[in-house]
Image (cartoon, rainbow, N blue to C red):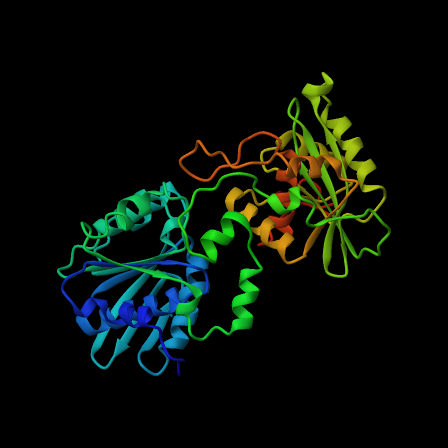
Length: 413
């Protein structure tokens, strides 16, 4: 496979291991800056040049994301240089050239329990793709498995909060860790055209722009959706021709319950209307049956594809199931990924909010980052419409989740 010219930082990644000064390389910075390409190729080149019949590891947040973002492109980049065979059932690659053969296992480090997956194995080296998304326990357990003489580590990530453990333990202590630290921007990816760079610059706003475009480790502070608080993405309520419908729901008893009616028109999803009820403010707690009546009224006889709901709302899910009028879909409830996706979808015009949705618009002006937290967290106030909006975007416009109940098969979960 032929490549365009490499930047000086990419060349450093390719060659850093030829010196004995470092045990690790860290590449952080902007999205689409060419980090993954040079890191994964360098990792395999080092392993195949240094060892025979040894075991290595690639790690991502999940094995699925690792295959998509690293392994599939890597096999194309190295085509004609090495023979690569993948054993999907046991999650490893066998890479060979002549008599040199090495094995590369694939691991996912998505939560605190993941560290158990890598216990017991002996490694000669490991590459962490998006290490800032992995728990510290998993990363440290994986590093501890690298006990072969000369073993080395590759770390690759986009910036997060500056209180993040990887920033404080590795980037700020790079010399003590014997790590080469390289900060990437999109200018380091010489294959990107100016048009593509501009496209990515328009995808993000606020803290996500500073992290993913500027490549800065900065705290999340202030309003979460500052542009929407100023009216960006808020449109007049008017008649449109819609081709599909969803309802999203953040269920609450004494806390507010928020539901949003979403319609698709000309490839844009509009929050057409909403229901919002605050039991504490009204000094009356609505029952699940009353909420179901509100849901039916909001749907207004439309053909609703599914109701996307907070996964913890077990009693209301059961109520909807029992009535058999709507299909139910448990929402993707990843908060930070969801907020980032909502921000980018507003930015590129994929979602808009009708100006009749007054509670959503009100929450845009008060939904803030918690500047007292050590990591990125929204303040758990004025967030109910924000949550149901996020459920819709994450579940319908992000990775799709299975319907847990349909009108055709009552009671199937």
